[in-house]
Image 1 (cartoon, rainbow over the protein chains, first blue to last red):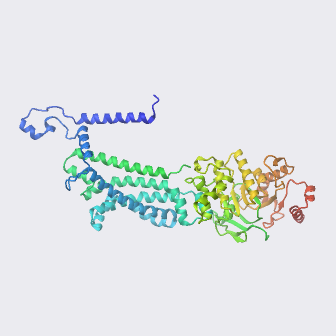
Image 2 (spheres, rainbow over the protein chains, first blue to last red; image 1 turned 90 degrees about the horizontal axis):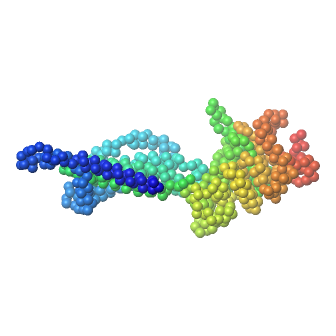
Image 3 (spheres, chains in turn purple, red; image 1 turned 60 degrees about the horizontal axis):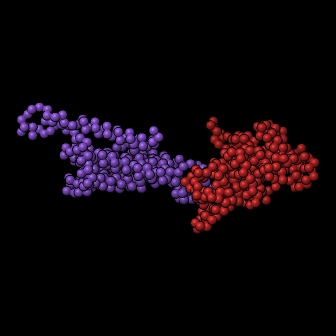
Length: 279
Length: 307
């Protein structure tokens, strides 16, 4: 009765998981021999027709395959048969390169927008038009101009990470309390020192929120982008396994994408906590 | 006029009015302050007290006129003039030491870290925050935060200390102790102080001169009250001084009635903004005449001239 809320929540989580897996298991299990048929013909038809087995894999099969993937994540048997670890590493690499390029552009530009009402007004129409464009719409243009599918995927990540960070940075900079700026002014603090010692720390929580939104979007977009550009990456892996009709691998990939996305989000959440200041 | 350390010379502040034209918060304001004096401004909200302080701080510019400090016109904020903000305005991501050290490094760019911290430490000790150096503002009470604000302002060793209702957000007990601290520090260091307040007793306790400002828009400095209480007054008994109630009543009467009706009262004898009357309420006429000191003599002379 006195156990903590988090313990009780964990119990409920486990129960929900068991219920879901059981329902899944029951839903896809075989119903036994369906009809009498010629044994030779039955062999050709497979378990789906003869045992009433669903084409959807059950949780046990998925789990077994997952363990197999996790035990050998980095094998490389040629272009269409690489371990999930390698595929995830490709995806993560593209996301991080595109994302950090976006940080390098978005944070200074956001600062400029936030500090200069002129630049804010001048850049506003461009941002308003560019922001709602689906990052994948840039893909043909990127492929045509960059002429490299890997770099195009990085560009797409760059462009989709840019806007939330830029807008949040500008918002955070504009929102810096007037009294803190007045403190800096009465202390005759120069522009650069003011930017780094007052505005940046004051806006950091808002900037980090933008960075957290961006990393989430980047991880969403990389899967779609890699389905288009192909070759390597977890997005390509999903599409390739769909072409192989390996639903087990598709489900495994979905799970892994979710886990990696969660880890990325948590890393940024930690970073945000580091720069947050209580008032 | 020439010995004035701070000289506010005919400043005005106007804002564009909604229907065209301009609304003047105040017009043609003149005020001089001598070195080492403590000046309080009292007036109702909206009379432009904070604007005057911001102009003195260099954070705001007058629409007209100028302020001369130590022979130099104010062009912008300066490390010579420290501000203690009403809302303390500490940087919440810095510790107590960090906040004070930030001001110290702003004034002396080349100082080494150890020197900066030693300097900051003296002022942290001065306001009684020894031991709280590594706390963040969020861990401090309102009074302690304002102490940090005071330490930060004093640490740059300013020529002038500007305070914008520094104690108004504090409870009565904390306000009292902080007033004592500020009074102790300012009298021992001979600091020139310009302070805005709503609190009549605070003004009487702290100030040498109390400037009474009429209601805005179009506020004027109605009177400068010369504090007749002895310089060595203490919190425990300054309200028992024979001049105390006369002084207090004078200021309260001003705030309650005359601050509103000032423009009408002075219709016949036009108010000269350059020669704001200096008064010494609470002092019986005989004592005033017998005092024979320059202020009283000047005052009597002026009153004679006025009548």
